[in-house]
Each structure stands twice: as C-alpha cells, then as structure tokens.
Length: 402
Image (tube, rainbow, N blue to C red; front, side, top):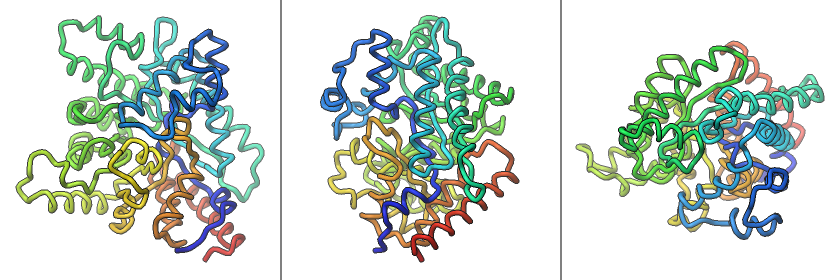
C-alpha cells in the first residue's frame, strides 16, 4: 500500500460532486443563525448539538435525515442561504477542492415571501462571491475554483417538511400522496430547466433525494423525462438504503448520468423479485453496464458507515469491490456537518483502508473532474481538466509521488 502525506492530499486539486448544502453548515454558523432568528435548538453549544443531534453514528438513514429538520429551520431567508453557501465554498477550497457541486432541495426553503427564484439566487450569490474572492488570489499555474448547483426533488415528504409542501398538499387534496410527490417533482423539473435557461444562475443538474426504502425512483420518471429532453444532467440517490434494483431504476427509468452512493450495488440478497438470469448474474450485468457506460458513482464513505449498520468495518464497504471492477468513482462528503467529515478526511479514509496506487488515485481525481456537470462548454471543460491534470502532476513531483 502506497503512503500519501496529508499535505499531498490537501494540496492536490479535488472535486466534491455530492455535498448537501443543508447538511454541511459550520456548526457555529447554525447556532448563530438560530440565535439571531430566535429559533429554538436542542442546545446552543457545539458540544450539546453534537451529543443530541449530530451524532458519531445513527441507527439508520431515516435517523440520519432527521438532523436536517434543525438545519432547515435556519435556512429560510436569503441572508442565511447566501452565508452558508459562501462558507461552504471557502471551506472546500481550504481543503484543495477546485470544483464543487452543491445540491439542495429548494422546495424545503420556499414560503410566502421567499420564491423559488430567490432561494436559488441566494445560494448562487454565496458560491459566486466565494469563487470570485478565491480566484483573485490563486496563481496562474493553478486551476481556478468553479462550482455548479444541483437541485433535488424529494422521493418522500409530508406537509410538515416546509410551508411549500403544506401549501402544495392542500392545493391537491383530491390526489394521493404518491401523486402529490410526483407532481412536486415535475414542478421542480420545469422550474429548474426554466431558471437554467435564463442563464443567471449556475444550475448544472437535477437529483432525487430523501428516504429511499419504499419510495422507488421509477415514480419520478416523468420529471426525469422532462429534464432529459431539455439536456439537463442527472444524478440520483440510489443504492444507499436499498439494493441493486434501485440503482437499475435510476439508470433505466431516470437516465442517470451519475449515481449517488451506490453502496448496495453488489448486495444480491437485497433484490426482491428474482430476475430471469438469477440474482448474482443480474448484479454482475448491472456492474458491467455501469462500468462500460462510465456512469460515475459518488462514493460517500463516512456517511455510509453512519447509516448502514451492517457495515462494521470500513474495509467491508463496497468501495473495495468498485475499485476492483474498475468503475468510475469519485469520493464525496455527502454532509460535512451531519457526518463530521471533510473531503480530505474521505481521501485519507480511502487511502488508509483500500489498495490505491498513485495511478488509481489519479484516476479517482480525474473522474471527479471529467464526470462533473461543468457549467461551461465541453471545449472549455477539456481545457480545465487538462490544467487540473498538469497541476496534479506538478504536485506529484513536488511530493515525490510516482
């Protein structure tokens, strides 16, 4: 196993393609925003919040997701959203991230005096302000800092999730809960494309997030058909709390370009109805299809360790098998606050527990940039990736990595 110094890990240009805005606040900022807005928290100290809310481990994905009720309370105005977006970009750049894709569900923040456009613009302003400050300070040899925004539809919600969902549910009182969730996703898809086309906000992708078990991706096929026909790039949370069939649906029904998590890709025992070819062959064919089509998996090691109780050791994570199968992979944080992690921590965890050569590490870095939903043209993206790789090679030489 090759050793890579912490300095090398921090300095090399990296991406984070899967990071939730409302799961990645600075804890001090969460507390300050709550105090300023007279919002009650379980504790107003960082130690208390870490003991009561943001725990080292969680019973399951649903308990993990319950943390977002507290962060969501403080992210209901322009100032708060802009500030946390700004800080998230600065924190990532401090760890060597040069390209950041931030995702969030705008329908959790929309209310009577806070529109979809205003919510999304506030996040964009924060990221843009950070980018402009960062890029004024970097050297010519370095790749600049860039970002994109991914908007998330929700697999599941209740009227209690936000004022928007309360109002939306009330307006469709003759529809079933499933129909309401489908319509909300379709509404977001149309709004995302419209705002993307207006060109003022760096919207780069569409996502499906939230509780996975019992809420299949296929239910949101119409929303994904709409964004596909409008040339929007797509990622889907899949295989995080359910098995290979969930990933299959994300690819075949939702046309996913990337998969968020994909943890249970190889868990044949989680397949419900036995396929004609048998469960093991089904998994093998699915993995081969993903590899052949370079459908990149956004791997979130720490997050998965917190929500998947069956994984008792990091070495049991499917990331090892993904590496063996030569899948296109990119390491991500998921939720920096909820998971107590950083992108450097994720790389350290991977390098310390899996066999990753210098060439394989460079592949991981490269996939992050190449499979990003880069905001500018493909020609510009190629130039950007070339500059990233040139800079990466200069750091290999500097740190004696061969």
